[in-house]
Amino acid sequence: MGKPKLIIGNKNYSSWSLRAWLMLTKLGIEFEEIQVLLFSEGYKEKLLYYSPAGKVPIYIEDDLVVWDTLAIGEYLAEKYPALLPANVKQRAEARSISAEMHSGFLALRGSMPMNCRALNRKITLVTELGEDIQRIKTIWTKYRTENAEAGSWLFGSFSMADAMFAPVAFRFRTYGIPCDSIAGEYMDMVLNDPDIQRWYDSARRERAVIEEEEVGIV
Ligand SMILES: N[C@@H](CCC(=O)N[C@@H](CS)C(=O)NCC(=O)O)C(=O)O
Image (tube, rainbow, N blue to C red; front, side):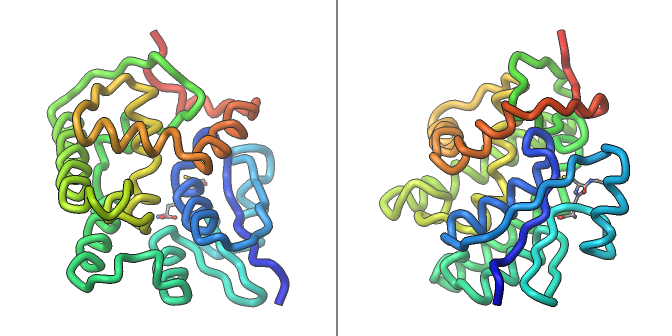
């Protein structure tokens, strides 16, 4: 078996790519990273060559193709159980908040696109967005409080749930969303994580600009 492959988009903008990349990286899996710059000439054909859904991330192991971030996470968790907490109740909760991110937070995902290298962007905090932000802070505070002794991630050790929320830390920084206390400490820990820093360094060096994702310039 050759090395698994992970097809990703722009590191600066592709939050789903970051999530899958972080899961593989934290599991210590050696993988080949293949980047397709989103919305560049012919990008869709390139993605469709790898997966019928034509979106990143795509995880490939020989003839096995897994697309969609949550499916990639679940597949990896079957092979590497450490990707989810050992306790059954915590596993269910880690899955719940991962699914909540995957299917929800539409206001946040729509009006605060991930743009790792951008700072000092401003957005209007409409009600739905404020509610999304508050819900995320509540999640971070709850799990960090409950698992403070076990380690610095949401459930102590790194889990799929941390990968699902990692792009939010970049978003809060880019759009200047204040985050203090326990949630703020978690956000700072995520942004200072060496693997996240490596992703950020590559994102900063990218030159491609996706105009639709450049939101909140003042
Ligand atoms: N539900 C999918 C969403 C994947 C997705 O929307 N990926 C974006 C980049 S973050 C993409 O491929 N966009 C290019 C396109 O839609 O053509 C997942 O969880 O993986």
